[in-house]
Image 1 (cartoon, rainbow, N blue to C red):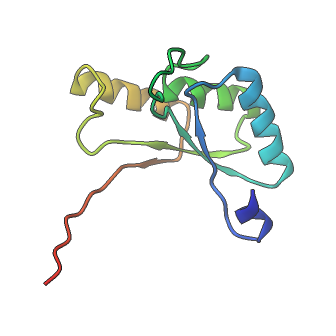
Image 2: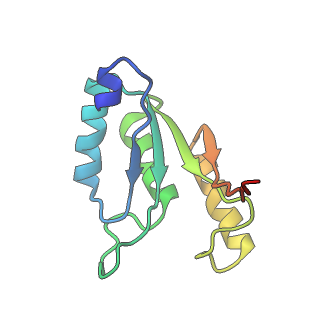
Length: 120
């Protein structure tokens, strides 16, 4: 919120892990009131010792919920893996999950890129 308040473009990261529909609904309302129009919707990692993942199991469920609640109000970005997610059962399952996010009209897929740098 502070980034947006300073006049910069903000894209809050919304994790579905441990989240409830009511909590996400309230968060979306606050974002709308503050003029935020971009969201990065993620599943997130289950913290150690946490047994309940919340009301959303996968990011595509979160994206579908955001679209159902807000229509096209937000530009939604998601995570994408260059190969396949390490917790997916197979590359095919991961691709199907990514496609499900796309069917909910997400606008961009971020993927982690790791570079090895060597100092000379």
